[in-house]
Length: 98
Image (cartoon, one colour):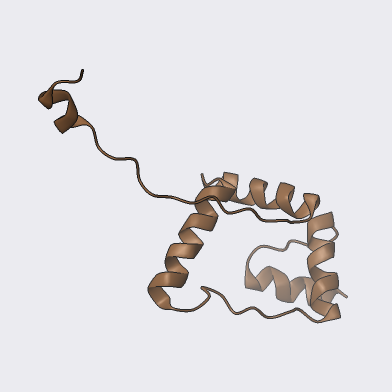
């Protein structure tokens, strides 16, 4: 039988609930890479987002769907098919070169 001292040191487990999310496998892999680079797991990032939703009473981002031009640019960036010029003066020089 546990003593009174042992019972006093025992804290109840936090009340949490599991959340399951279905997401495309590639999206999951890419999200894990992005979040891992800043030291977060998917669970930690999702937990942070939910806390922010509760605190702000809204989504922490605008749920906008990009148009086809923006989607194509994002796909090109992910594929590495973009030109990186660095600072703005280099950008102007690159644009003038074309």
